[in-house]
Image (cartoon, rainbow, N blue to C red; front, top):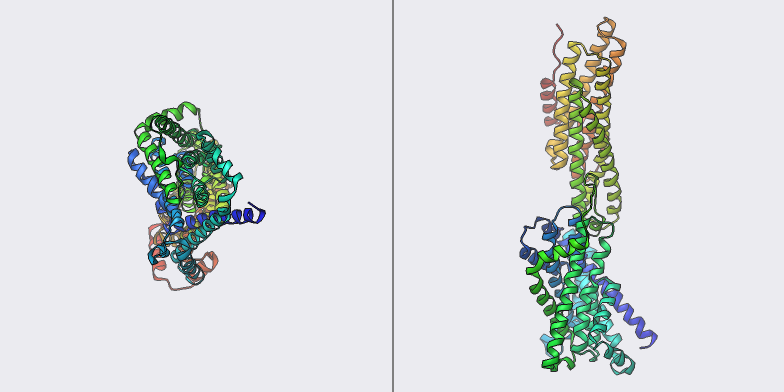
Length: 585
C-alpha cells in the first residue's frame, strides 16, 4: 500500500466514524431522549433489560454509548446493578445491527433491484434529502431526520472509500502474510481487541473488517477470532467512563468486561476443540461483509444465551472485584457521563434542581418555626441545609455550563435557561432562612419578645410568605405557568404588608411601646421575609418568561403593572383581603 492509498484509507475511516457519530446523534435527538429515558424505568427482570438494551442500541447504533449511559445510571443510583446487567447484554446484541447495514456494500448483481440496494446508488439520494432538510427546514424534528440521512450517507461513502483503498492489497504478498498470522486464534483475538480499544467502537472495527473482506483475502479462520476480540476491545470505553465513579458503577463496567471475556474464552474453547475433531472445512473459505455480519450476530447471540441465566453470578464476580466501601451519599452529584446524552443530562440537572428547591423551601419553613419556638437542634439543621444548598448551586451551575456547549433540543435549552435563572434565587432564599434563624436566636438569647400587635402583624406576613414559597416551588418543579402567575400579585401584597407594618412599628417606637433594640430585630425579620418574596417573584417570572421564549424580568413587570390584567388584579385583590392586617383597637 502506497502513501496515497493509506491516506485514502484514513480519510474513509474518518468519514465512516463521523457519519456514524452524526447518524447516532440525529437518531438520539429525533427520539427526544425517550429511548434513553426508558432505561431508567426498568423492572427487576433481566430479560426485559436485555430486550430494552438491544432495542436502544439498535437505534442509537452504539453499544459503547448504551453501556456508558448505564454506568452513569448506576453511578447516580437511578438503576441497580442487577438491572444494568440485562441492558449491557442486550447492548452487545443490538450493536450487530450496524454490521448488517454495512453489509449492503457487499451486494453484487447487475439487476435494477440489486443496483438500487447498493449504497453507492442511494447514498446520494439520502445526502441530498438530508442537506435540504438541514438547510431549509425550520422544524427541529425535520433537521434531526436530515442529520440521520446525511450521517448515513457519509458513513456509506466512508465505507466505500475504505473498501476502494484496501482493494489493491488483494495481490500484495506482504499483506497476505500478515493476515495469515491472524489464523492463530490468540493473535486474531488480540488484534480485534487492540483495534477496537483504539477507536473505541466495535461497530467501526467491524466495518473496517468488512472493508478488508472486499479484498477477498479474509477467511473465516481469520474473521472469527478478530470478531471475538472486537467484543473485548469495546469494553475499554465503559472502563474509562467508570474512573472516579462509585463502586456499583465500576461493577457495571466490569460486568461488561467479564461478560465479553468469559463469552470469548468459552466460545473459543468449544469451537476450536470441536474443530480438532470435526475439521470445519468452511474455515478456509473467503468471507464477504454479509458473512462477517452473520459471525458478529451469532457470536453475540450465543454468548448472551449462555450468560443471561448466569447474571447473578456475573454480579457476584463484579462485587468480588470491587469491594464495598463507605461512600458519602449526601453530597450533590451530577454524572458527567451524561453530557454526551444532553436530554438525560438535562433531566438529571433538573431533578437535582428540584431537590434543591424543596430543600430551600423546607429550610425557610423551619426557620420560621424557630422564631416562635427556638431549639438548637433545628438551628443546626438549618445551618447545615444552607451549606448543602450552596453545594447544590455550585454543582448544578458548573454542570450546566458544560452542558450548554452541547447541541441541545429547544426543550432542553429552555430547561437549562430556567435552572440557571432560578437556582441562585433558591440559594438566596436559604441565606435569608439563616438570617431569620439569627433573629430567632437573638430573641431567644436576650429573652425578649414582640408586643402582641407586632406579633399579630408578623403572623400575617408569615402566612403570606408560606403561601408564596409553596406556589413558587410548585410552579418551578411542575413548570406551571398559571401557578407562577399568582406569585407576583402576592409578592406585591407582601411589599404592602412590610410598608404598613413598618409604619405601625414607628408609631410604637414614638409611643414608647417598643424598645430600639427590639425594633432592630423586628425590622430585620420583616425585611428578610420581604426579600424572600422578591426571590420568589424572580423565580416565577423565570418560569413564565422562559416558557414565552424570552427572559426580560423588568419589561414583564412593567407591562404587568401598567396594564389592565384582569387575572392579576383579581388575584391581587383576593390576596390583599386574605392577608389584611388586624385592626388596631
